[in-house]
Image (tube, rainbow, N blue to C red; front, top):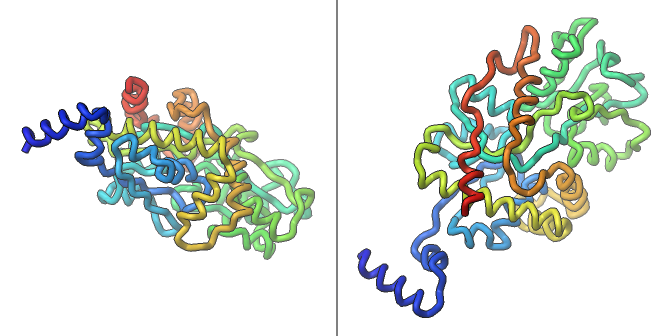
Length: 335
């Protein structure tokens, strides 16, 4: 069989077909990507990479699995349901400390989009004004940056008079609109605009961006299971995957409206709207890095420092080791 394939390859090369194209014709390497959340422009780069043929050109057959409120990417990959996941670093490091050995192999997002959005009428102007109020907080691993911030401010989250009452926030903005909470968790590219679309104006709101508060942590990195990095073939596959994905992100940043339309075409729920996805893509572009996807160790150290400053309730209890690697991105840059 190998002789037959070799003969086919030689014939193809004689006809001017490249070796890479011959390789693709033999078999594409399958990759399953688990998204952190539902299909939206937050993940445009991956859908663009698939739509524009960047994955196919890299010899990959990529399956993109949307996330949702009941899907925890670390659990999915630990159970063998994905080869690579998108997760926030606080969640990934907490999972690693609990026994799921996730390793960051690339970091497309270099800035955080997370913030706390409050009604101006509550009188909250500074972070210390949060005491005594009810705050909406996402869970499923999204609560870690918030808990680290409160710990740094020495504000208990036990509902006491000196602390704050934590409301487990669903993935909508209802608690703020219905005045069940003074503040809620929002992203610069999503929920904040849902609040605006619901009728409140920017003047009605006070926002605390985690970047401005010095507690920003890395979001939307690519993670794999540690033991798989011992396999050179898997590292090669991931290098091609990251390279093609970053081409997708660069294209999405340069063609934002078209990228948003590609996302909409992949939204099986039909819940997303063109207006919201185009606006989201514009905000997401502000969070992207230089297009290489290489993790900056300084950003990693800042995230770890934030998470360790958790007082009596830290997100992680000790400095992680082996939680990131440049093995994949180094291989990518050699290609």
